[in-house]
Every structure is written in structure tokens, then in C-alpha cells.
Image (cartoon, rainbow, N blue to C red; front, side, top):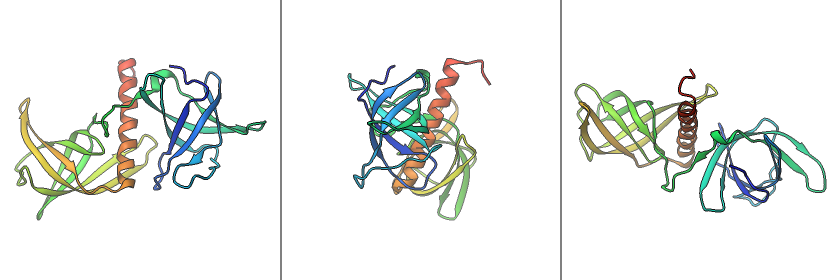
Length: 219
């Protein structure tokens, strides 16, 4: 889909410990480059000077109120009557539609450790979001629905970085599906930085899943 001139973009830095948001407008667009005005930091209301090579998650809204996101990076800048920053614009297939609910849940295996009382369980998720996850249970598990646990979630990013999110959580439900025992767990004490780590991880996995759907025979 076309990103129209004047569209407002919201940029969130990728692979940083800080939680920042910037707003800017699309001034021009070519086939694979979006030209934006200098963005404003949402928290400080000050102009931000983005460094070449900086990576961001960009979101925007269409005229019919749909929301989309895509990965981008700063590829340069152009002087003129309106100084502009140049962002890489991916193909339309790489745009991800954002769900209306607060946290998008992605089906993907993630290694986690669940600490309950004196026991620790090394398990794997079936899906994950910034609000909770579902995990495959194996062997003897002592926790039950309603129990409070502590999670260590391992998030491997596409660039090779790995983040470890440690957070409190509550077991919501334990059930069986297709001969497998599954627990759904709600995150209860995740700070803003860790939530952003999970959101970015889910966004990356969405992108990977989308590419597999489009090119199912690619490795």
C-alpha cells in the first residue's frame, strides 16, 4: 500500500534499552526511500537528530483507520527548504497490520524458565505477546492455575542480540490440547523497557511468518 505524502509516522528505536517515541511526517517518497521532516521526541517535544544507520519500528495509520508497522533505518539526509531525513521503505509485503487489541500474540517457540517456590522448569512457549504467553508443559509440574511465578524469557533477535526478560507472572489456566498440556500465563510486573523488548521481538517474528506465507519454499 502507498504511504501518502503528509502521513504521520511514529518511530520507536530498535535494539536499545531506552523507550523513546518520535513523530514525523512523510514529505516525499520514491520507490524505496521515504523522506521525512526532522522528528519530534514525543516525551520532550524537542527535535531529534537521527544518526545514519539507526534502526526503527515505524507505524502509521491509513485513511480508513487501519494501522501498519514496518522495520526501517536511516539511510541519509537531504538539505533544502525543508531539511529531510531519508528512511528505507520496505516492500508492501513487509508491512505488518497491527491488531486493534493492545498486544499482538505471535505463535513462536521461545525458551523460558519458570520459577515456582524452590523449583525451576525449563520450558518452551507456543505463543507470546507483551501481555502473556502459552507454554508447553512437560513432566511433573507443581504450579496450578492462580499461582504466582517468576519467568525468565529468552528473546533472540534477528541481528544476533539476545535479551533476557525477567518478570513476575500469574498462571491463568492449565488445559490439554491435541494430547499436549498447556499453561497460559499472564505477565503481571513487566516494566516498559521489557515490554518493548517483547513487542519488538513479536514484530520481528510476525515479519518472518509473513515472509514464509508469501514464499513457503524459501529457507
